[in-house]
Image (cartoon, rainbow, N blue to C red; front, side):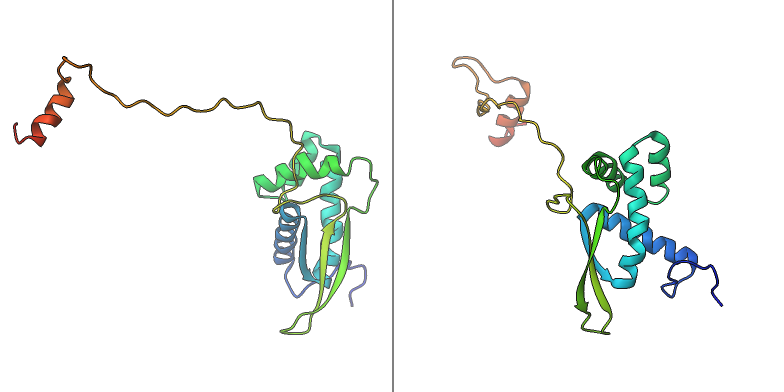
Length: 167
């Protein structure tokens, strides 16, 4: 009997299940949306929403608690820099699950889980852009030449001597 045992087993041990949820959460944070089985998406939703709530508060303690699960530095930075502030006014419900259909190979129910309202470009939530300072045009480097009537310096003289067959 499974009395008072919440959550799905997903046919994994508790360590494997935690590793799976961590990896799925990192992928969701990095890409903004992922496609997985419906059962995994439903288990991932509360896991990620707790991380986003920590990112909204943004304290050092919350960052340390979130980094226990988000082991990729780039994803943790994205979570606290972009995703948390994007949901600052929202009280919950940061993700949505959309049913996609059945997987061709085994007929598993597939679903797409995505973060609501976070624009994602090339897998990374965009940071606020500031206008860049105008650049000055680069000039081509000038070739080094010797003045007429002067001899070449030591290295140049050695190179000229080797080309002409002298030591």
